[in-house]
Length: 90
Image (cartoon, rainbow, N blue to C red; front, side, top):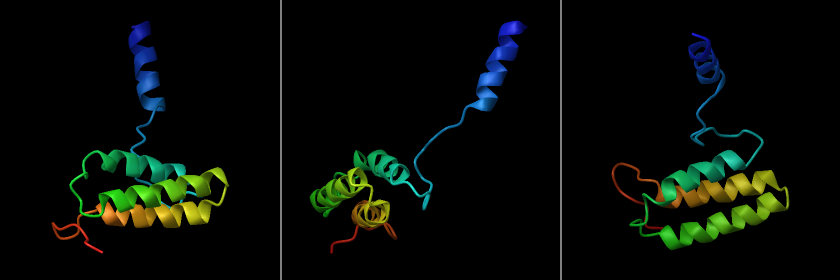
């Protein structure tokens, strides 16, 4: 019973971080979201371009320009996000 109580405590006190939150005053959530999508969207026409935008975002994050980081990552995500079943082409 003791171990069961400890297990329940850890399950209730932990949380899953999927990286889908937005505008959290941190670019890390957006980076995680991109990472989660990246491997699934290699067939997107703008995939290589989205990686360049992701790299720019990482540079901004290192420089602590969170607003630019989020802006660049949103553009990178837009390029690999399907809208209406189709990828953007520009």
